[in-house]
Image 1 (tube, helix red, strand yellow):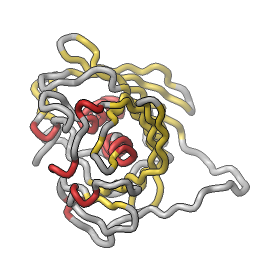
Image 2 (cartoon, helix red, strand yellow):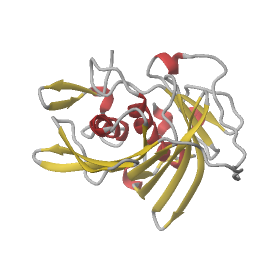
Image 3 (cartoon, rainbow, N blue to C red):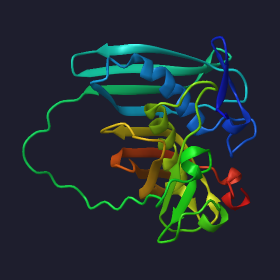
Image 4 (cartoon, one colour):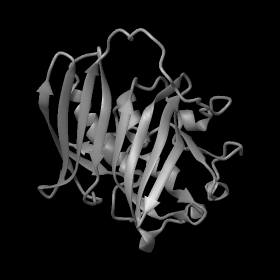
Length: 262
């Protein structure tokens, strides 16, 4: 089965499906987020803890060459635990991440305001839930795998089953959520001329982990000024909302990606 990386000892080698649309020599955001999430989940204090926040800083290109990952526990408490991880190439840190684990507990009494939520999902199980092909939805349109028909200025959603991070290993719920969160930039910055912003980070917040293979990402907000943009999305599965993802992105006009060519 396809995967983003193969493993040789302590090194992780990107595969062709890990390569970014921005450059044929760079690794994509989902692959990076997945590899760092893979490392961070090894520091979970136990099943009663939820990885409630994952922040990945994408400050330097990860290139198509071997990489290593290292991590450490920052704090391990009774209710809050924190761990950090770094992705290295040629002894230099190319990306880093932090996870905050929170212990589950009783729900406080009382009612809270919540927004109305319409989270679109495909009607039936489809290839995006058993393979690697995402489905896209623009505005009130139908789900489609056609990139070209989704290149417009309408609100977007994606439904996907993320590939395994490392060949020979099952993809875990936390890895799915971390990789899906990188689509926040995709869904909030894909317009009528393609994608002209590249994200420098992504923060995923989770009240729970996804159930099943399919994860949806729905655009919620986009704010831009002077070539800096903030994109916000909802993360969900067939059982309902999971949390959110927020990206900070910078203009990348010289390498704007025309998604209709895929």
